[in-house]
Length: 256
Image 1 (cartoon, one colour):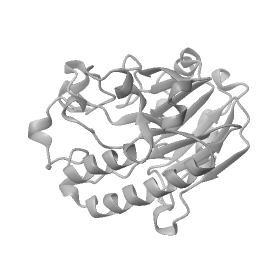
Image 2 (cartoon, one colour):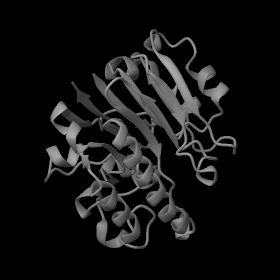
Image 3 (tube, one colour):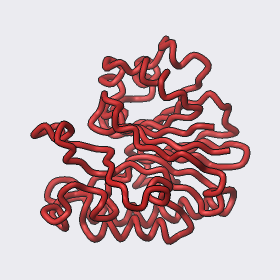
Image 4 (cartoon, one colour):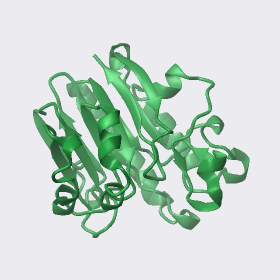
């Protein structure tokens, strides 16, 4: 069973960028999308009739604010249940979390809040990290989980091209955000790609400015983390940085 995650930076934009053939080539069973930037009806309208999605069901969670945030799950394996949010009203207005429950694991896709320019949202981000971790731990007590998405953090210096100039200055690479990710992983979860590739440099996001992708001046912001007890069932974690269409590339994982 192949699981994939992709921050598409606008579902209505990405469908105009060879999205249909990309989905065919990914050949994934479950696809989590982040930053759909669309209401639920607009997500369905954007994806309606795509040949690559024949046999898939589409679920989405949108922000109250139109054209902002949002997540979706596209799956050809029927879920037991699909539910949005983490159960905290103040944190469930931006469509950032969507969960599909399958027979023997939970699949969660997340678009973690960006701390914003000037780190204006860093206090909210710190609260989010604690609340989201509690949510994952509660799910994990029921059955193991795969949590994928844009975590909006480069966890270690190897995860971004220019760590020194960005540390504690740029959203996504402050010590508070790094500690938040460390706390996630210390709560019984594993960063599958880094576990399999401890020394490899590979990124999943590049700024649209300054030809950053061409120069590979990037960040690894997109993760597939799993419950520790699920790790032995996983294989082939990938960062698919040859896939275009967004400022992020997809990441994927196989599970048996």
